[in-house]
Length: 296
Image (cartoon, rainbow, N blue to C red; front, side, top):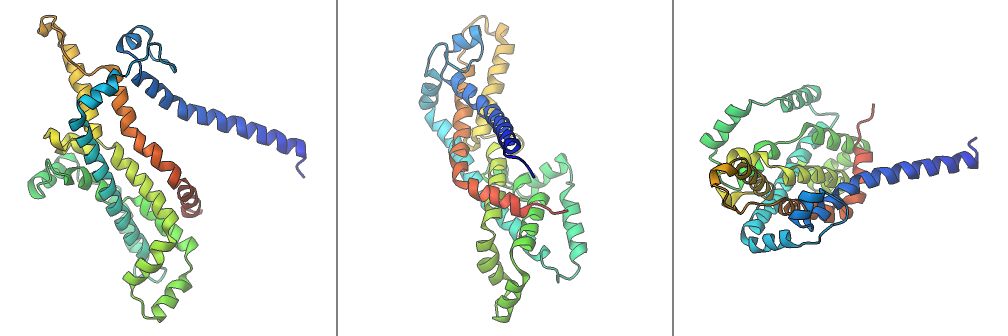
């Protein structure tokens, strides 16, 4: 039997560890926000700090002054995340449902075939030529959604399949078939409602991937009006670095380049929606991970 003192000691140690982990996760966010409301001069002289040494909102004024470009990039990112996440979760769940059926003909073959092919791709050059030369997605919204994101994830399919096997009784599917329901009706009326926890969890993973993705924009987007917020931020950093590295060619002239505080402000603005949305999805996230975990 575990004594009360041992339980109390375990709780204290657990709380200390969890508090330490929480501080490690929150500290970068505080540092990012503090840098975004600090003056450029204070960042150059004193470096980063958790409390602004010289308060300045010039970075956020810059965002407001360039609001059309920033908010357009913001809109592209939001639209990409919403549409891409919905399609990704739909495809993953539609593939996971038949793989969860024990009576699926050739189940082991299809599982091996599907998961094996998800681990490899044709390479960057053939993929680029296919998307730009055949599907013509360059400089369109589809350039942010389709490459690498709309395709189902092997891990997501595996978690959803395991969730269905462990949580939804097979007798429920059989009863629905007896009542005349087809596979699509069972999927829509049983799998989707009862699979909400794992679907929300996979949706969160997919949404984070879409929100943070800038590779697609780097490869398939050259028109600034189709930049996502991540591509816009990356372009600012690249332009600033280029001008700083070639300052000698400007003859000492002062150039208007994005400052550190401005980049920090845009990074904070870019991550703010995810921070606000997560608390509302947390209960589904925890439940979905627990029930969708692969059992050995």
